[in-house]
Image (cartoon, rainbow, N blue to C red):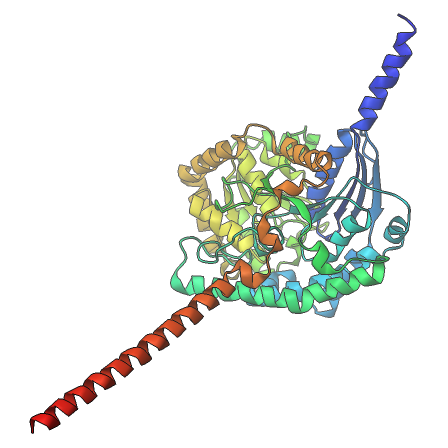
Length: 522
């Protein structure tokens, strides 16, 4: 019996190793919120026992302790690129609030490919590309960075795409998902459904312009990157539609219900973790706030310290009048005129703060991760949206009844005070936030378990090609039935012409017979 023990241990070890996969994650967008999504997912996969390699713009300060391995490849050049672009254009992020969706579409389509240029050219990434390593799956965030999808082809692995927001034209196109512009607003608008005629018109035009920019500029630019940085790199057309599944950071309680093809999986909120113990100073601040706490953060890319003086002073005067305590994410050491009820920090553990029962309101920029976290914890919001999807998220929160929108251009002491008091004194906002939170939590399994299941499913099924819809194999004119419509128009036109000339000929004959009869009668 003793002689069997080593054999059993070897079999157990072999079985355990056999379930481990080598996974490459690419979350290179230079935004902390984007990195948070990717890092949370990759660390969870490493904790499950998989061997993870993570390419990002940030990286971990200390290697996470996991059952599997976790290797960081940090591409700092992307952040340097972004900062350089901001300096060159003398761009204040708050000025972007004045931009319209058409301008935002052009800016994103032009800037993102240039900003992301260093990823594939990074020294460590090049070492990886030219190594003999193989991966079982490659996971890439979808955000105007399509050249990175060629890594999956290069390493001979299935491709999984993560969408940081819900279904949109960037994602729908690559998996053949229907996205009618008649009732699905594009991600850069703030349209609510049902849309008016003018909104549907603008929404459709914006979609077409976006597709034109992609096909005429973005895709050719991304294709050039592939050829430049990947040996024998595939053509962009061969990798664009290669995703086995798309993990959608969305959920029907937050996002508008829309059609999904079978390989689109909702995992919205997978980055949210159970609350941890707060630092002692924060814990005491929140516990001792008898009248409640307002948490104020403009996210990771927008900096409160860059508010123009008139906006900052309006906020300060408003906070000074409140009986509630305020936590304000402020990126500098000093805030001139700081009220006694305001506590500052360059960074706050946002999820853990929102979990505290004394938090009554979250004043936010309306980013999707912040919106998801506030819904998870059932806290109403006052949104001051600036750019990207923030305006749509903010309008959605208002339409669902768990928040209000205060446009940045209209931010004054009176309007800010009025909005805060409306949310704090009207119980409907808190009630709606709690109801939506219940809907958000109502799932068979957690979103992270869902994400990991489907990633491992793709590995087990060698890319799961059976989930791929036939629409991806059709040229665009066939997908939209333009050839069928053209044929029917042609046949109808021929029939109409034949009918017209036949009737005309018959009429002429009848007229001639009539005339001949009259002549005979005379």
